[in-house]
Length: 287
Image 1 (cartoon, rainbow, N blue to C red):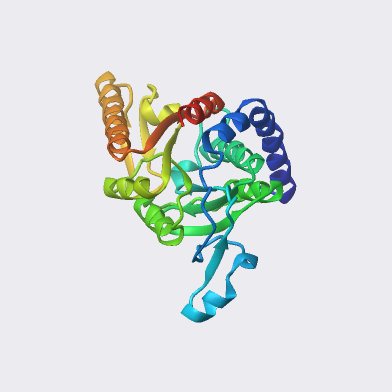
Image 2 (image 1 turned 60 degrees about the vertical axis):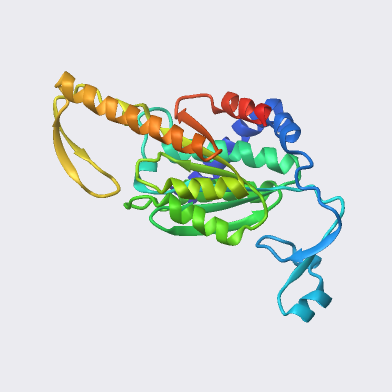
């Protein structure tokens, strides 16, 4: 996209999502998460994203590693958005590509967090972590996150969710709200889900296009895997072939839901044509 097109797209997303956010999501977000970060006054080791002005220089000099002062009324939370930028996310057969849909959901979450004076950060990953935007506050920061999701180079490689979670766990020690966006087309280690959800509040969001689950009858066609480059001819006119494909997808989905449930993490399965705001509203309400 050209710069003017990017600016226009980001502005459109901001207008749409702010209306949804202000109408319903922000209030539920505030009710669900207000005050969860409150601690007593203390000094603790520096964590990625802490403000430099809060460093306790005396203790830092004494122990030769950074420490920060935690104020008694500290209530802010950190929201981390982990976004899969493997090539299968740059796909869509309806109104939006998956990447555009993710950008819109991320905007709604980001503006909800901003309305609660919370920080929001971004990790873009595929076969490895490609970009990290440290958590910050404010509208301009949220717009920058939206732009990065829209303009990222989507990678022709299998996504490694484990690596993204492991990277985040290595950097963010303090409990955060973690939203993991992917189509979950590739394998992952469910142990990392359990490890992450023990420390952070994890919500996996499978973003899918309707053609991911069912392929229509279009005769003999060449199917192409955008991540591995593998190609295979398939007779989509075969009712048995279409049924088998759909059943395999359903089986994968059941296993995915079970993995998140067994990890005490939350999970959403969202079609790109679906109204995500209702699902997020219900999620916040339950929390």
